[in-house]
Length: 265
Image (tube, rainbow, N blue to C red; front, side):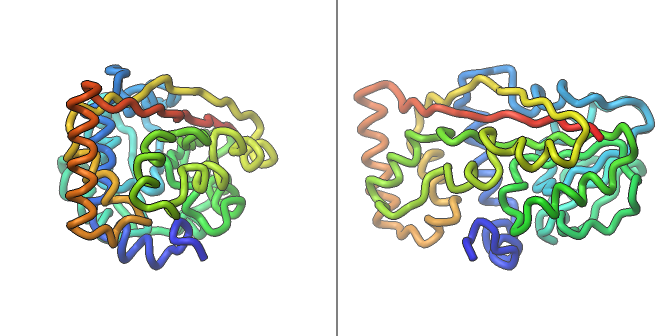
């Protein structure tokens, strides 16, 4: 089983705490060329209404809601769920107390929710982690009420291509982002959603990275699942190499390919 879909590894190592995820979010927040912001852009595509019951599966550290909770209409009920106990605990700690928000540890393939309990669901860059993606999509469809919607965010096959080229200079056998995109990506996500949902739209977010500091880039690389054994000597070598490129070029340009599927039942 790939580490990308190994639920024990994801729960106990990669996402045991929010540190790895936060390192990856930080580089997008600091160095994205599109200043509108990914989280804001996604939120504005969601057809949220007052009194909705929303599920986010794979909520991580609740970064999406730290930014968007103030935008919610009144009386919206949120259920934030993640496979990792550590992630759920951190999400609970960072959001202001609110009787309309509850937290749960849950597997997207076997959601502990009644059928039709939710009016909307969000799966932000996580469906490609599921061993059985079709089962996870079916579960999300099951817990949605008639007319309910699913927002599934993912990447395209060329997302961060230049970053993986940099990594491969030091770790030649490191996989590319296409490993995740080939499982559930912008090119093939419709194949999973269209047979289950009545309508599916795809929306692309135009963005790139212009990285002007080397240390956050090294931190990002160290957070990736295939580089967790990156030793200090190699990390220092990476840092020196990236600093040299930034001095010579002013920055490092990295292409992004991200977007969402918005599906309705």
